[in-house]
Length: 248
Length: 269
Image 1 (cartoon, helix red, strand yellow):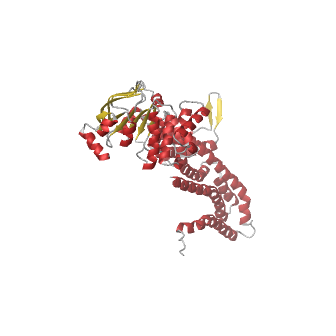
Image 2 (cartoon, rainbow over the protein chains, first blue to last red):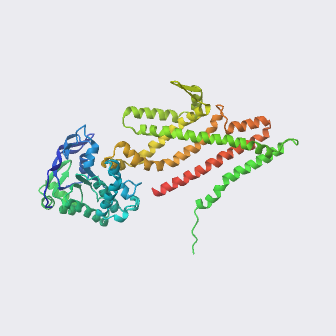
Image 3 (cartoon, rainbow over the protein chains, first blue to last red):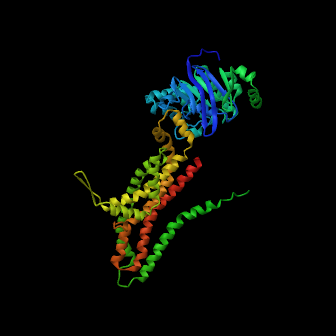
């Protein structure tokens, strides 16, 4: 994607994450600049989701440093809530709040965390619903929505906080092919508007279209990275080639 | 054409509903007839005697209901924070909550009642203030302790039954821990808590007759006094049955509502 890239928003330096004796990430480093869309691909269990959770401070890192919008995530004095105001995260299983309507799901955080004016929040929430093409679903409960619709509400919910970076954790993995597309279109539009996005995905065609940069991870390390055309179509590393042969 | 087979439960259900109250009413009538037969010719009829005592016994029963409502309210108010303590990750709050819950859940209700009745003074002096502690207030406190421990377990179980991703999603939206509990977890957990909480209330209501042992004038005390004052042992059965029926009529709808709620929650998943 050919848009101007701004200053670094997310910087990882030698990030290591262990669960007990199990090393999930060992020395991951990369930089994501403002407006950039980055895709992380790789086999299941290679620590991709953990990486996103670390960036949002949902999982503490064992060693190394992560800075998000100038804030050190691995600082014991970190204000987690301030960090999470800057980071929007969307999960594979949507994780909407089932006892609240779609509109309420979007409004809750701005009203209760940012303490913004309810009327203004509602206006913006309806705009976001229109943006994800769910204008008529404002009053629907998550249980009444399809997977793709729920996921788009989840994206709108994260956007309502005006984050500086959006993290997408295999957001289409639980969806069937038709609903997958509507979610991918939403993400693609966001990326095109200049939102900084980090995506963990198994959709290679999608990565090829939207990513500015692709990272292939395996066994907790970055095996190969580069522009999508190079990594996905002319991989240099045999491990990347193996993986792409299996999934394509 | 084939007739759809009615499931056994559907056939039994409409029958089962009136059976219990009918049976109880039948036993009451039978015992009245038996008491009537035992009555010496000159004495007042058994039916008249039961009717004479009924308003007093009913008044006593209403006191049982009052005590049950107050104990449940206090027990729930104490049990909620106790349940949150059980969820605490820090060791000392968790251990405190655990010890209190285990102690009050595994002690006989009557023994707890005795302890509270006899350990607490009849009035409290706080500064210059004297607060009287009537025995009914002590009884409410005594019954609320095991209720609180049971509510704490209900709260913990319901909170833990909410899947972890709900916590992650709330944290990801920058909710604080208490905001997460108040806005996301509790509203979902309370639905799941309601049926066992109502069940606990029905059990508590029946357990309120324990207060008659520590000398409080409840429905059971009055019934016993009625039997003793008339010196007519044949009235024992109908009078006790009348009291039983009062409790049954009050508690049975609660049990039914609990079942209906449980089924509705199961359907919703």
